[in-house]
Length: 64
Image (tube, rainbow, N blue to C red; front, side, top):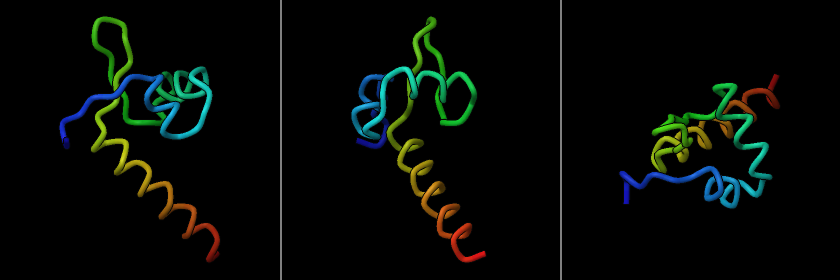
């Protein structure tokens, strides 16, 4: 579902990171997150694009 909205807990499980890490990344603007009534949420499509961007940046960094 392209409009699926994920919680911090769900994103942490997908990325295999601690919830605190994902929360800190959201607060710092390191991942494409937004708040709804004080709760962080991430659109699945935005997360998928962010992952692709991270992979591309990693590949670009290796080639330099």
